[in-house]
Image 1: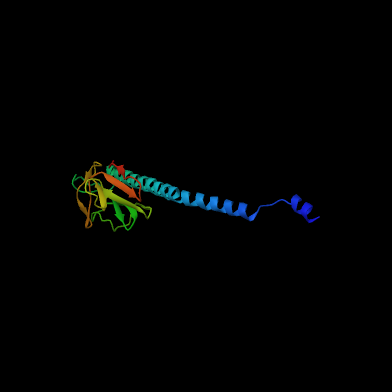
Image 2: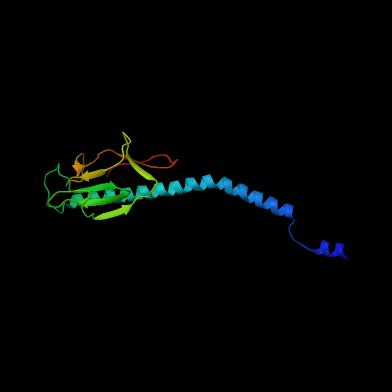
Length: 164
């Protein structure tokens, strides 16, 4: 009677359960590097979008020239990267500084770095004249660049960003 009752029962044996768990653990170990690369790729695309948005906003503000500056060597608007935050600042009667209240700002992904393309020095700022031309000037103690930029995140290849 015991044999017929055992033969009719259905379920998993301990060996089947252990094999299933081992396969699941193996798949998880294989997927972790792929997941990490996927997250880095998403962070890089987000950083690129934020930077391009900030550069576009700064250039648009510079072309509108709200402070009515007419000196082509004077920055009208600037994009600043300070403590992981991209911000757009606009010149007023006292000039322009990356510490003034921004017209727009957005936090960058924490694992993203923005570097000048030619020498791989971290970005401080990009300043635009009233004609929308990037200037090589100092804005509030920060050195602004005219160089194209690279966005690096983890093991991803650097993503080049040209200045608009």
